[in-house]
Amino acid sequence: MDNERQATIRERLALVSDQLTTGDSALAVVLSEARLQAGLAAYERARADGLCHEGAWECALEAMQAPAAET
Image (cartoon, rainbow, N blue to C red; front, side, top):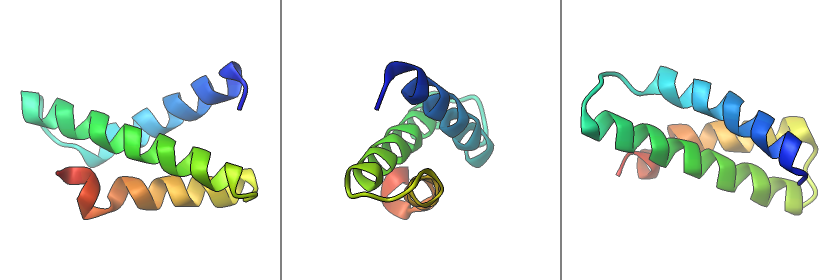
């Protein structure tokens, strides 16, 4: 994925992560970053597996909402 597209996806996922995470504590910041990383990884995996942007985006959103992203 090119750098510009990756930056755009990262920005969009960061917004979603911020909406999912409440509070300003250090834990909330860590959870937000963990969700963001889970979303990015899922998006990149899905694209590498041949999914279109929309399908990969859905995978990213699902990964960000998964309980594993909260630990």
